Length: 141
Image (tube, rainbow, N blue to C red; front, side):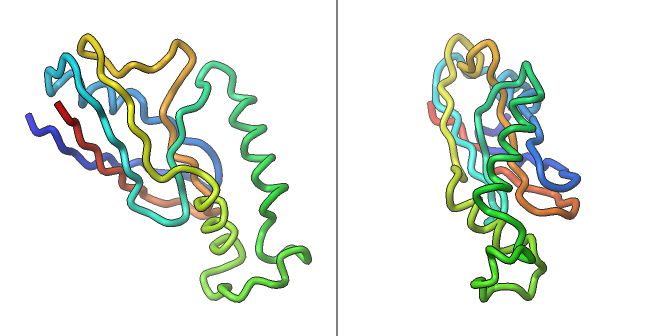
């Protein structure tokens, strides 16, 4: 097995998309007892988060919060934007991505990612249209 991999996550518009299962499988296949998993999203209009995966209302509230602090580009409050040629969701997506992480590190302990009981790993999609997102992964031993 390789200690590097690129995950793909297909999104269907703004929201959080969990891919914890793929990460757990990658770590298991590499038979790593102890190390550090680094995940880096290869895009500028989405981000990566560790977030609660038990109650979907957490994801709804996060989406709503970010839409309030960074409204759509066609909102009157955003008429100062100059980067508009990719649509009204593009520059707000870049701003949201600048406010949230594009990489995370997760310890590997006893052969598993050391996530808490209610934690999952998500792509936080900031664009309206469906996208295929790439996340580079690396295990350090």
